[in-house]
Length: 511
Ligand SMILES: *Cc1c(COP(=O)(O)O)cnc(C)c1O
Image 1 (cartoon, rainbow, N blue to C red):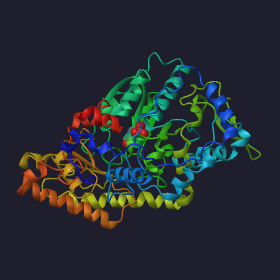
Image 2 (image 1 turned 180 degrees about the vertical axis):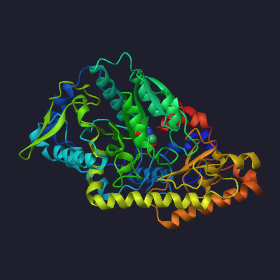
Image 3 (image 1 turned 45 degrees about the horizontal axis):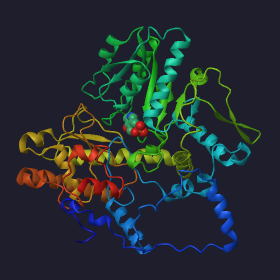
Image 4 (image 1 turned 180 degrees about the horizontal axis):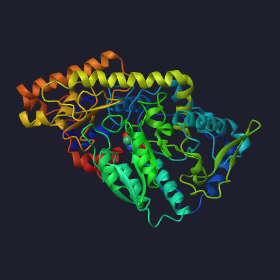
């Protein structure tokens, strides 16, 4: 069996994980010097009884080149922004993370630092956190922030806890029970609001894809704690009524929460703080580089207007005469939301990203990402089987959501099949079936880091798939054909019990 190309069926025998041969070694260590023998014995004695191994670990016995080839092979089976042609994962901003950011984030001065170290020995880390926060406040138009949250959803949760603390402080928590959330929102929004103890009220989108103002007016009241909004929303549409929305919500005493998971369309162009938002989060791991496939680590800093700053988590990095320290001085803080200070790797990448691009560069990145998504949307919206629902004729922002509903009705080929077929072209699938308000959704976000040739290649592939759907639908329905694994069982592939994180899992699964 070739190691390069194997199919699911081959895995019934876990041959591929039996790469080792007895007594083959991939390392050489100098033999123990006799005078150190006693020292080693002393150390061994320190290990509590019962914690010493009684038999050697079960590891494959392999030579160095075999190990190297094994991991290179695994990496080639993986798909990433730096290996693949195009990764248009809408709402996720899979942009290229510049190598310099990776080098910095992997530098031993950062990876070797421990958060328990005395602050005098980690001045550099505290300094870039402090500077990053300044940049963040500038981009967001907010007054203060916390870098602690480790993800977008985590930031939302913190933002809603702050909202809650604010209402509690005013003695209104018992009556303000509702958080209003548009039907286009990311699923994390209602989840965060519920976890913080609120009831969620869904508000429909109007035909332009924005918040339906009449509906909003009819559901706000003294029971409203706040509204969570993504702008531009998950349809890639900018809600130009945002100032009026803020006025309505503020008018009844509610707060405006900005889900800025994805800031790629507006950074440097306009600021959530100027749109009327009181609490915001941004996913540094989307807009400000950091590869974030596979679930992290991420960073979702939360920014607030001055009147909410007292509720932010502690500690905060403060600077006095060029010396950085940690301040715990926030009597009304909601507490800590993360052990220590959050994930500093994505923070450093974001800081490097801001510095290398500069204010003008950030703005240009937004402009190009918007241009790229409109280019794709305009080329595909009239291709047979695809449509661009909502706000007909209006431009999109950083992403666009096509629908394959017509294709499904006319040929039986669904959005899922289109996505799978794209894999045969060596392209990554777009986000599929989200947002929920678009049937057969294909949510495409090219980002600013893709060249025109990549956009054209994607457009060409989407057109060919449309032709195939109408001439040879079986070909699309059976896709993918050319990947390492062909069609997976969707449920098993995503189930934590069957997801394969080590070779042992395969042995158990396919014995
Ligand atoms: C990605 C995303 C989130 C959640 O961010 P995580 O870091 O995955 O928790 C929330 N809202 C929107 C609009 C997003 O795109």
